[in-house]
Image (cartoon, rainbow, N blue to C red; front, side, top):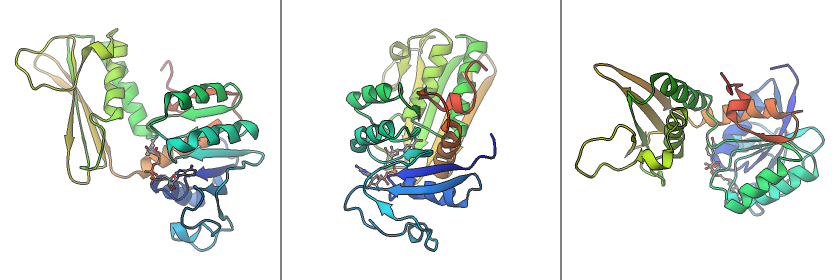
Length: 270
Ligand code: NAD
């Protein structure tokens, strides 16, 4: 990556991810904070965002409207309700977008594809560089091993997590299915409250919950008398913001299109 300075606007700036992103941008030699936006009425509107992230004033006030300037990249980690407006503003101002918000409606996903015909957009459900690499390794390993080795995975997250298994666990297991020509929906096994032997084809995905675990995923390939295990452990949500900022630097100046973290890390075809 080159030494250009990338100017970014953070959407959802008051949220957990927004604050982590702003802290990292303010510490970066390669990025500059051009704006911070959160919903109308959010605490801290019109105030300097420096104190929000434990700093002195930085000269950027929280705004309630997204108006990207020339050369700004928008990074959105807010809520799905905001997505339509974010896409509209980015298209109108020709601003590249890094979209981190998850849980988009089908409508919003359609708008995302439509917008990506006019501006470059990176969209990923998990911006961690490590998890992206794990998905890649899962596919590459499964391809080499075939279906003789049984694939099983488990994940553990904090007690507050709402969905199980995690979207990331399903994405990793999907990579195993894709690499071995299996239809993931037909072979996924997310519940073993039953009797009977395991079928060769199935891919087990089990979820554990408790405490304050940020997130751990382990994929096992279990063969005769040997086992390969791939594990990723997330210790801090800063891993997502670091990946998103890497994506922001990457997407500046790209052609219109819909990209993911595999593009950012240049993993397609590796
Ligand atoms: P959060 O609830 O802490 O923050 C969301 C922020 O968005 C809040 O400050 C809220 O006021 C703001 N907001 C809500 N509606 C808005 C609107 N219309 N306009 C502007 N701002 C608005 O949530 P969080 O934990 O920071 O997560 C934010 C999003 O990022 C979620 O969708 C989450 O699932 C997603 N996320 C994605 C990744 C990834 O790697 N892709 C990682 C972590 C979180």
